[in-house]
Amino acid sequence: MPDTPAVIMAGSGASLSYAELEARSNRVAHLLRSLGLVRGDTVALMLPNSLDFMALVWGAQRAGLVFVAMSTKLTADEAGYILADSGARVLFADPGLAAVAAPAAAHLPAEARIAVGGDIPGFVPLDAALAPHPVSRIADESPGRDMLYSSGTTGRPKGVRGPLPEGELAAPDALLGLVAHLYGFRPGMRYLSPAPLYHAAPLRYCMAVHRFGGTVIVMERFEPETYLEAVARYQATHSQLVPTVFVRLLKLPEAARSAHDLSSLKVAIHAAAPCPVDVKHAMINWWGPIIHEYYSATEGAGFTALDSVEWLAHPGSVGKSLLGEIRVLGDGDEPLPPGQTGRIYFHGGPGFSYHNDEAKTASVRNDHGVTFGDIGHVDADGYLYLTDRAAFMIISGGVNVYPQEAENVLTMHPEVADVAVFGVPDAEMGEAVKAVVQPRDMALAGPALEAELLAFVRSRLSHVKCPKSVDFLPELPRHDTGKLYKRLLKDSYWPPK
Image (cartoon, rainbow, N blue to C red):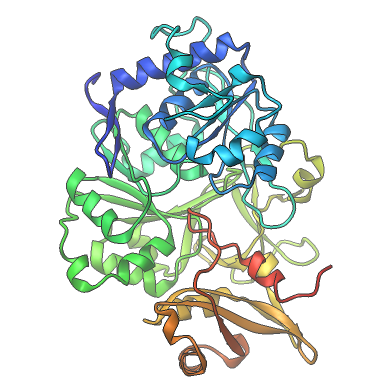
């Protein structure tokens, strides 16, 4: 076990064994104690995927600290806000992010600004900071936890904070225990993580794999064929993806798709965004019935899941609830029966709060539980179906239009690399349905492709649900995890408030 690889970087092959991860994370814990941090204090990281990412979060976790993994895409102002709002007392930062990290952390003492993997003026190099400290465990170990900030596109992001766990240091919490049971986490598993570790699911799942003695293989960055190569090279048994990754994999040439042996892969988990039915059918046809889906959020107040067999019997569903009772509410907060569409709430799930924002915490709660902001329905068998985000519903001529339907259709057109559908101002109808497309080849963007795409979607959906026009962009604004920043696009079409 000590010599088993705990972390492997997929591209470089650099690795840390369990013994090396134990020693380095212990040194991190001693360092944080030497800087005066005690249980419940906060540290922050602004790092790309790297070996030290996992050593740092495990060091903070075993010191009973709250660790804030920050996006590498932030501006200095955004990063400074998160550092101040979270109360972070230490920042670990990558030299490639010095232009953001240095001004954001200017208020921290010099010894609390730590450069990872190189030098940043005014920061202490990590190896120099760790050098005086032993590889033994600190005397007062206790479990910490993450506090991850929402990636919302309006207003300031909010930290999602739950209570510090009690009990054994490496014991999984209830949600991670459930996930491990569902997906067969076990010693010897090899988990391929293609997403940034600063996002909730990749970070939490990688730490869960370590709790069960598996190996985490971290991609420095995702590319579709590189992902398939990594599955084959490292004989990955488990992986987690998002629907945009499925789409990019499916649009590889057939020769590239069939060039790699994927037979080691036993469990492919996906979440984070609704998956078009045609996309998921195609993935199950390609990879077999190894694809599992779940629906949850950073807040962790509810959790649904289903496997491929269940999904094929209930196509489009995100599963039955395994944590929190699903309640579907109408406009007056009245419970709706099966088959009727309304706002989705989870009742009785784990507690959480938005850090320093009681109003936002209260806004997602009522007597029926907590909402993640989604609309959908439950069928007679208890399976949940998501219609769209409540914030993106279009009201056109008094009719509710859910843009996800048109997005799902357009995603499958061979000339579409990415798509967003939303409402834009219309003098007659109030809102009109607009599509913004990232074409496979920007040189094809123009009236002919617009007409082809409009005809394609109109042949498959009611005209009320179809875009009235298509605009083209060379790239849509997406988070590295695949989340579409649709609000940024939509706001550009509406007058300032």
